[in-house]
Image 1 (cartoon, rainbow, N blue to C red):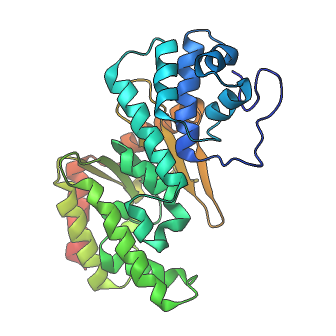
Image 2 (image 1 turned 180 degrees about the vertical axis):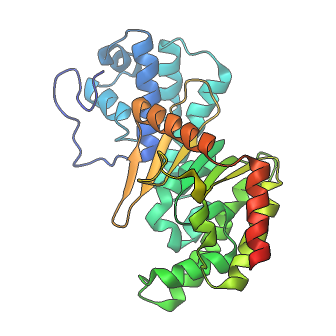
Length: 299
């Protein structure tokens, strides 16, 4: 694998380019197709009538890719599956729009800090999320999201909170429509017992979780306190997946100071296995619903 360097050993010029998650994802898939054919970057450069440096930048997600270039590379790599080609073209279009700050999320300034995640979420087919301390954003009620924002205490202006809540609710549209995203959420019991916003807010939130869990595209499990030590104790994470065979998952993790993207096939496989182990230790869906219903009655 050439990684971030071209065949001439030089790193692509980052001074005039910007790497994006979508671009790196697209470049990584084109790199995988090239290596599967045992071709070099020089072969790709010849097909594009471009330099090896440009191919290196494409594969590192440093530059947007034109549709004719994607078609030319797919032809060179022997990728004639119309579905795969169409997905790569759609991914390239979304990346180009993202670089120009386009997309529905652009009308919500509160989303700017996580715009790359939302852009990926918008084209994903499934999400697997493990949460230790909060209800997943796609399953939050407005009152719960608002209480989280107030409790966070980091807002400079109180007027910024409501746009944040509106943007979070807008994201939830991906759970409905003609092609709703598949959501598999595992949440620790402590997150559901935390009185975010008080009893009334949590009654509404827990009721909403029960309603959401009845949707055919939503799978909800609870990791109970009685599970004891488990492999997910150190951090929460979300795995963003795409439909086509061979598509590489992307892992998203938030910390108090930064957003971390894990984009390699190795990291994706590691977190997929970790999520499976967490899910096996969590309560089954019907038992999770029973536990949530019991919490609701306690309130």
